[in-house]
Length: 256
Length: 252
Image (cartoon, rainbow over all chains, first blue to last red; front, side, top):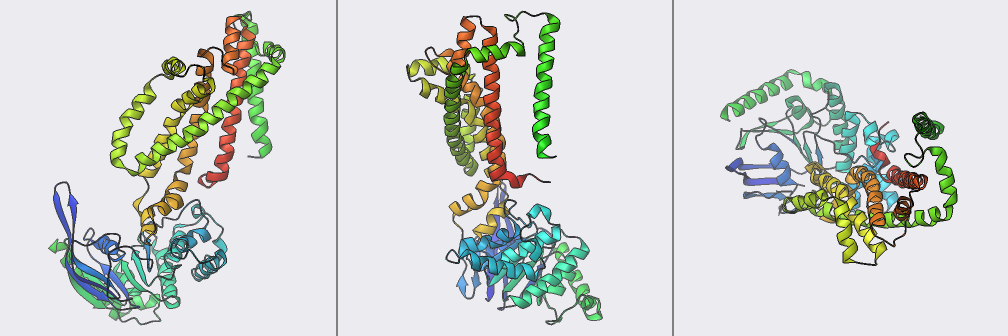
């Protein structure tokens, strides 16, 4: 699904007045593409995820998903956050099934289970379907959370720093899991991140936002192709892209 | 801990407590119109065994009915206060004020209001005394639900009701059972307040009052022990339900 933001401005109402967070932001993500959004902290990145998912409505401008204005939440969206927010009273399998209970009520239990197991085995959690979330490590919880965000075959996947709280090695594992999922499932993805290497490794395009109120400051197309490996992060070309992005972030921070 | 130990250790602690009690009475040479000892209790139980059974049942069912209703009242208030900040601000002072009133002072008011309806009066007092912890725990559980939990379901277009029974309700269960354990013990206080104060009623409270009038100290102590046993019984029923419905909250 093609995602488009057209001249979107948004502000939060505070007791002291209005706090503008997004200003005249426009960008589009072609169907099936993976776009990473980076920018200084607090610049309004998470607001974008809430706008695209329809949880909030922008004050000005429009958000489109396949040329339809997004006014309210839609079942064709999947979300994952930095906090995996798994339900402690459900085992991993039932946690992954949760979205199907909301959007595919007609689907029977066997089909739901089959679909959830398919994803769990993709991310390497097949043996843990009966475990409680509290028995899993941080990385495993995040894998389960990714499965949950994809179980209802969403056309749009919104990831709000899902790997942010993981240690460096686990994070790299999860990046590869993400690539596996990207190959198997078809979705258009927005990834919010603070990690420039993560942005380059996972995305087809990286957007740099300016400081608050955020607007589109810079766009960079990554050229790693479909069969990326972690080693690709250490080539001259990637190093050059990284340094460009880092400079852009510096500019964005000063602008703030 | 093995299940064998889970039974043996509490029994042993009760036994040691009784020995200590018996010793305390013996060493001080207290006569049984001053302090009954455990060995005085059994004759008292045996002498009034049929009264203990029928009055014990009165007390138990009144407490259980009252407690069940107070769950409804408490959960109702909890839901209202948990979801609406305005209602929370509006209701808290009223509930806290109501809860701060000693229920012993409410008993004669209720008893005079509905003369003769002994069962209903007792149940009313049980509700008054035991709904508060439940209301507070549910309202706190619901109002502190992390927004991300709601977002997972809201972003799929789930209804408010779906969010409530799929996420908010189960997530609050451990707090609810914690409060229910407090409420169980409070409920017995409520039942007995009414049974002791209101004349012509039945129940263990009434038996206690009879013991008091006839200066039968072993009987009074036997009633207290019977109440403790009922309290423990009901408490562990709540624990049983807790293990079934909120056992996930316990971590190994």
